[in-house]
Length: 335
Length: 301
Image (cartoon, rainbow over all chains, first blue to last red; front, side, top):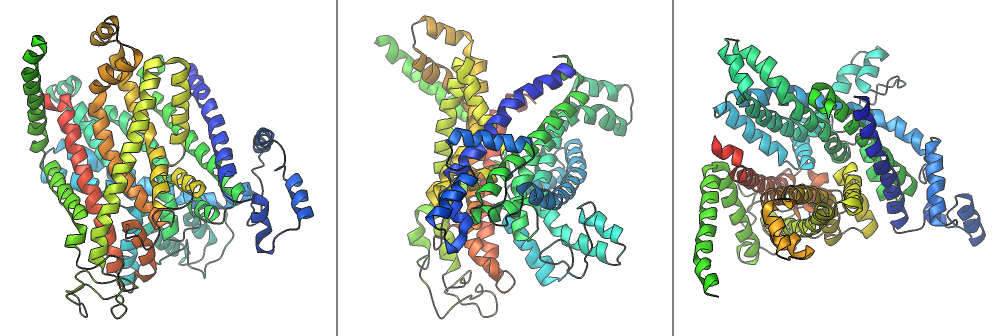
């Protein structure tokens, strides 16, 4: 098991190196000048320009700039945002809980609905439930989620007036963040109505973000279940008189779980991409919107470090999934 | 010579037999056939857009801003699906939009398929450092969320339809490279490849003529999925203002312009998105059918 983990880690190191190099290179390739972007519309005198160039190290050879950057990152310094003049890592940590909360709720929705739907569809293969579920899953998988979000706003916010259009909580509720999760903080604040306000703000964005993972998980669960339901050990379990519930739950599902867990892990990247669109539509103050705004403002430092941080998170989750995979599938550990 | 002429008809017959078998399995999937019909209709709409569209896509009718669809109160029969905020006919713009979406899908698939196959074949055939280098670069591309990477690439290249297609192709190619590499590695040591090598075939011939045709099935399925993915991603980029630029009647770009009117004029939002959904759904139905038709495991059952 330890060797398996070390192997995985050894493979990841060059990729992380490559990711940092790519994020660094992308930002150097962005059109425009970082110093001029920093100076804004007032412009900057030639002397001051030279001074700033030296202060931020932009006049040093490009490979030295890269090593400077890596050295700083390893010490937890991800640079200072050009637009807000605040440390990037501070902004990231302040906004990340909003994205994490949204993504967590979306993933819970996707797993809690997707897995049972996939199992029932497989067990009742060819039934109307199967056809309906798989039709819905393919539609969800084909959905332009930014349009789906707008449709939900038209119906639930515009037509029915049930849910707010943007933000995380009603403006009348103000309390310091404790966990960064609005659902928990609103409960801790003890203010009446705060929690339900947080829920009503969260519900549409999380449905939108859950749509594609839900569709993918339902489809993957169904096909994994169909595969194992035809195996000999399932037939044996049936033949020895176990109840269908036990056969499906204990024998079939545990083995079908392996590809499903992998699929769930792979959805993390999808969630991050989806968060960009979802947060834009619902003005959700998370890192997806932060990245979009920063690209628009040509905030090089934020784009570079944001790319790096997001890619690292995706990789970390994939690593955890790989390890989980080894836990639920003993065969992997031996190899 | 005589030998060659004798084998030709047999080969042709085998080809049509393989296609017949493929069609047999494909047509058993009703969803796939439906998807194919919708897709063919969309292609026809795109080709004959100037003949079908009742108006020019960018013509502005200043006296008919935000006209609702004809069956709504206040709708006009000249504007079947209504007009947008500057008085352009929605239906005509949607019809012309089909051209953009299908073109985007096609170009992106051609770009990413070509570069992905070349990289995958090189990696799988030569292994060693070539393999390591290529596959690590693909890993790096895959480590970034696809839309985010495409956004940054477009920011570097400058917003616009062509750059958006290029960025999406870069983001999608690792899937082709991985699939090709795996297939090439599986085929490389088969006897027919070794016999071709013994017969004196060079690297290029072995890669392109001997091995590659036997790796096509998974690539065709992936190409279909990438086609629909490309349309979705291009629409998303257009929606975020980084894809096709206004007044191009690209569906995602149309949605971006329609956002401020969602509560006043829902139809300017509803139909472009519906067009994207129908197109992508049709292609994904075809993709599912292709996967099933190529999958030998399902044929047995």
